[in-house]
Image (cartoon, rainbow, N blue to C red; front, side, top):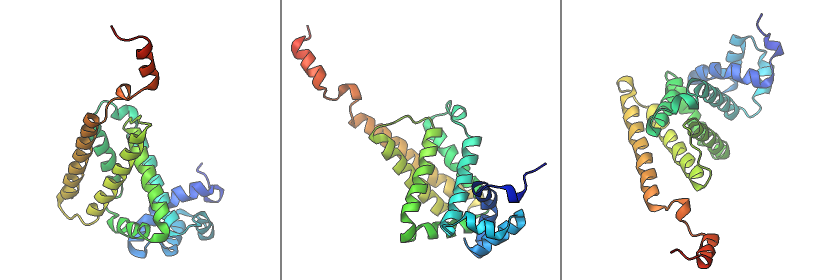
Length: 220
């Protein structure tokens, strides 16, 4: 027997209602009207639903993003992607996210507008970083140095730019968006290859211990 809506935790309410709010956001915006409609459809008390989203629209959008993150990690686990080239891993992860919001372009457009507001700048950056970090981790990225941050910053920017193209793309099968994404991912790969040529490996960086060791035991 299923769990009663009255027994759900606030996190469970957010996860349950997020898709319904997104569906209504295309018509009512990310608003209490959209939230109430999703709550009624799911059998959740609207008062409890509002309590679950104290941050208003930003919280509603965040819950939708969380749901997509969770679905992406379940559908494309790291071990499944490990056999693919890095370019293809990233492409599949981003494409999964785009497919997850297909048909909800207006909701995405309104969400982007809300996250572009100055008061939501910090939330927007955190959300973008979290999703980019998850994608890189699923792609088996193990960088822990400066590369860790640059990769996530670049991918977050590419994903945001791709979403902006996606919401206005009326081409067959979103072909323009896919071509845009492929070009941007190719740019990441070129950048990483160029960086590898310009930045010496860790074992070639200056090491005081190695230097002193050579003074004591000069190479023969």
